[in-house]
Image (cartoon, rainbow, N blue to C red; front, side):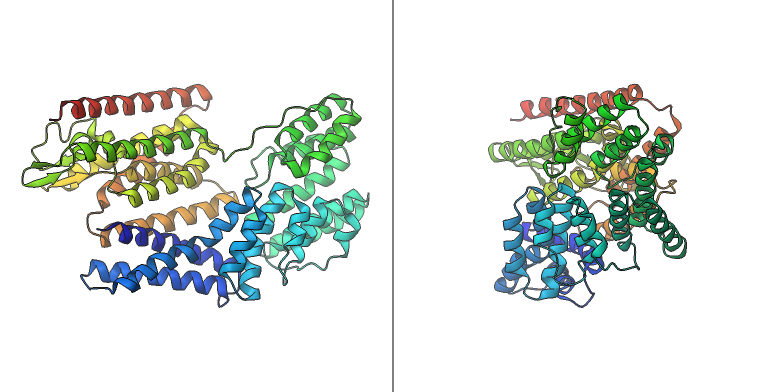
Length: 521
């Protein structure tokens, strides 16, 4: 299978999910979802024809290879540019690729959402979509503490996202000292919440709105109780700020000063000023802000190691081999690291090869896809369970992928490579962690994970040389670890032990790979 086909397979998988969320942020027949759908269909069609042995005109194939990633990944590129503060680049991509007001409005919503998360209210206001941008306008004005401006915005009253506008109104009413009106707004939110589909945005907005009013009344215990459970998607500085305000009104000055300091440390640049004012009023020095990154240190480290191992794999294969083994041409890296069945390779199914096959990949697209999914899902799981559990889920998923392959394909000739089993192990552990939760965010995550796993299973069956059993084993291993971890005592100590054991097993497997490589002629 060529690298361009592997790229288009990745674009097809990504496109299936991109179609779903583009239809949520834009009308179904508008430019953004239509272009994403067309690019996904074109990529999938070329893959289908190529795997079926149908000749494809080289110019058509090249056009799809260029166009498909452009329109499938463009919204991701816009979001990444905005997150780095490069709003001009985000605007340039939007203008270059989308030519109708509906298409540009949809992509601008992504830029505005990121600007609001970063606290860049002026940048958000400058890029509001031409239509249906009232909720974002209210949020941006609330971020600027333009309370009267917030109350002048005509807000929608239907849909999960409309709760964000109601939350902005509550903030404005609290800021103006009109608590009775804020209570009435919250009551209206609660009625809508009970009547409508209970989505995660509405849940977060209602909890925060009630906490803000309680904070303004100095009801510190109620605020702490309301915010004791995680609210995914809410920046930590906002949570610290609400509790700090409750402590301040309650007269607990030392607690308020400490919490305002934590809010300042975690706040993006655009929101630090409000916390700085309170700290200076208390005569407190400004703490050093937390260094902001993409999060997930162990996830990033693991992804970096796998990327470096792929570079090492290319260097080894360029200088050694290939080798003829049992009538098959086998690269040096696969000879040293792959999990194998039915080939006369020394220790081809040894215990350590149940782990070491994750160190090598079939190509740049293969490793790139695995790293992308690991970064996406791994950081979610690490944020919930810590880096030690992430390493354990990766190791157990990898080992189970090899084990299930050895059972299901006993007697076949198999060369199993790639970190997919480990990545799916992390996905399985995350699924086990959220499947029993009643939080709206977790229910949405369960649906997304299940849909993604079904798609991976279908691709594993449809695409030659993709290991369905390695993938299935990874999910099973991850589920086993996830449920096992829930039954063990909570505590960082146990998590560190699990991570240390997993890291030691992976390191021992790697040492065996090095031993084999050094022994190659």
